[in-house]
Image (cartoon, rainbow, N blue to C red):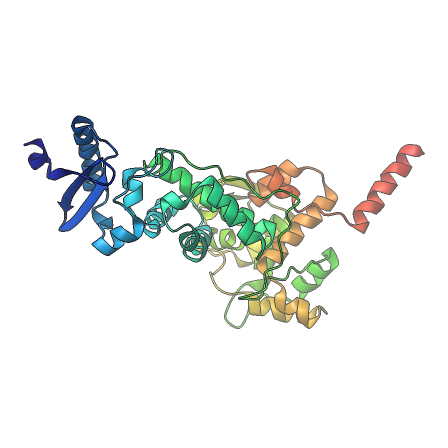
Length: 377
């Protein structure tokens, strides 16, 4: 009578001796093992399984062929996916996770995570039960044969976020251990697909030459010189600059620039000080109201300016927005050891991220020797 009211029925699996729970929801048939041989405990387990499906998986109801592919008739192990997590296919779980995080992370980051899920995780792991500590270690070894260690670390960061969310939502009993590759594991350069980004290192003199060659306004009306001058002076990201508006974030003559939470990749709301050069650049294009910089592609102007400044064809065509930001932080690191201040300007919540921009160089070596000579004298 209880089974009829709840909408499911129990039957004995002659192969395992455990009771199976069967029911239909939204026109689809389901079958799970309760992993119980006692009728009373099997009924309790059946109620739980039925409730999980009805309350949380209407959008993920599967056909019989889908169920056979993802093996829902066998209940999940106590340390892996729950019955609910075993039922929902991995692509659906990733879609739910991405929808959950899209308001908390930068759209570019969400797009990268979506690419990881489609091209890597779903194909490799197959189902949520396939995401284990052992399979993750195997994933790391497989990827290190194709890409560098830094790329694998980025992929694992996304995977950690996903499994933590699955555990918080009740899809996983315990999140598996996901360890980064050891420092001795270097990986290999990626050999296929699109050409890898070529980093262009700029000296301070080269930056000044490129800025001088940038037009104040392009034919399309883009304030190219002010845009890249502001970037090199503030170290701000391209997307952040696109979001700066008047009067909320800046007004002519103001000594600081307000960075709103939604305008920053790391969601780091702050008010950054401006150099005289940055204020001059902003004031030269500051409107009465609205965005200061139009969201558009400034790369053509940057390429032409780099060529006119004397950079080689190879360096000019690879010069990017991030190379300017990278140059700004690298040059600043040559003048100061205040990583906390640099991190605040750049929008890094962790100083360890800022430290990546501190490179060894001949100029730094000369300063170190000069400091030692001064102490000796």
